[in-house]
Amino acid sequence: MTTAELKLPAASTATLSTSTTMKALVYHGPGKYAWEDKPRPTIQDPGDAIVRITTSTICGTDLHILKGDLPSVTDGRILGHEGIGVIEQVGTGVSEFHVGDKVIISCVTACLKCDFCRRGMYSHCRHGGWILGNTLDGTQAESVRIPHADGSLYSLPSGADEEGMVMLSDILPTGFECGVLNGQVKPGDTVAIVGAGPVGLAVLLTAQFYSPAAIFMIDLDDKRLAVAKKFGATTLINSTDGHAAHHVMELTEGAGVDVAIEAVGLPATFDICQAMVAAGGRIANVGVHGKPVELHMEKLWDHNISLTTRLVDTVTTPMLLKVVRSGKLQPSKLVTHRFAMNDIIKAYDTFANAAKHGALKVVLTNGAPRE
Ligand SMILES: NC(=O)c1ccc[n+]([C@@H]2O[C@H](COP(=O)([O-])OP(=O)(O)OC[C@H]3O[C@@H](n4cnc5c(N)ncnc54)[C@H](O)[C@@H]3O)[C@@H](O)[C@H]2O)c1
Ligand SMILES: [Zn+2]
Ligand SMILES: [Zn+2]
Image 1 (cartoon, rainbow, N blue to C red):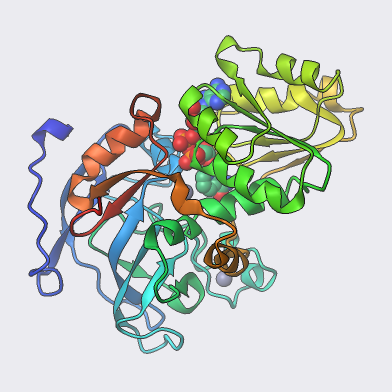
Image 2 (cartoon, protein in one colour):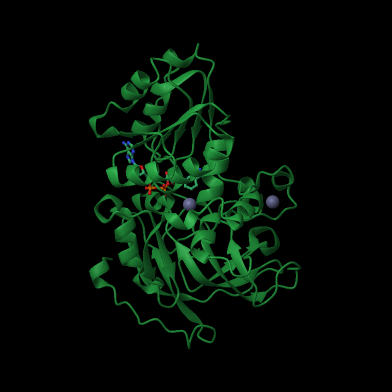
């Protein structure tokens, strides 16, 4: 199905809660997606909440899904794992949230009871984990069913800016946990981040909690690099010439960087990290990979490096929420484009062709987008 074949409906708020169907962005296999009718979600388990989405957005992972990188996502799935909304219904087992509450939806669902949850690894919750927009219908819709609502939702502070707060669903905890915490960024470190997309920029923003001495930002897109400069990057490297690691080695007088953070998800960008990590350094992988990468043990075996991978756990969301509320972190600055949810096909085109459109985060709202 192509975009041209789609008939986009006018936004309808009058039918929102009464109709048994709703509009949603549905995946139909690699490269195919459509804005179409789906049944409105209903409570299935006592821990469920039904949330009417007010704000959502698109993630680089959604682009990986559309490339076919994630076989767990099958034909017919509603995409999206980021969002803010209003609770419309709760199951009998939900104790912390009520109808009418405004909530931030975490991209990771947590039962809070299983062995993985009890050691803070919500990403591997036996009854949840990253299921939204993956193995369960997601947030790029009018409404979504959130299982284990007590562990998977956060109250939206009153008066908070939804555009900034929606970055707490995924990119802020992802950048911080998978990049900064796993990379063990310390005061005085030299850090290089490959990928200046929203996730790489979230790494850049949260790495500065720890006062690294230098932050190199590497990307192909000069517009995104210019944003990185505004957000605190000390050196910008456009890797179009294929020599990013070489430039980093020159800039560090042959030493390399203490922390190399991969925020793209390609063999080429993982290679840059391997080629520029200093002895004793850390490679923290954040990107979702659809293809194998080559691990250069012939070069790294004697380098005393650590390599980490992580699916975001979202255990730092409560802390990050406080920092965003204080104004010390202003993720709304990542928003470049706004669309009504029923213009989501256009929003995908804008985000997928980010360099052409100068796009970072594209915000989707049910109802009219704000100017
Ligand atoms: N581990 C997790 O839990 C988790 C969670 C969320 C997102 N992710 C992943 O993080 C990654 C980044 O997400 P995003 O939303 O910022 O995506 P994005 O697609 O907006 O950004 C990727 C950036 O990489 C740059 N890039 C592409 N090829 C490059 C190259 N050869 N050299 C340098 N830069 C290059 C692009 O120009 C772009 O700016 C994705 O792989 C996404 O799936 C992982
Ligand atoms: Zn994501
Ligand atoms: Zn669990």
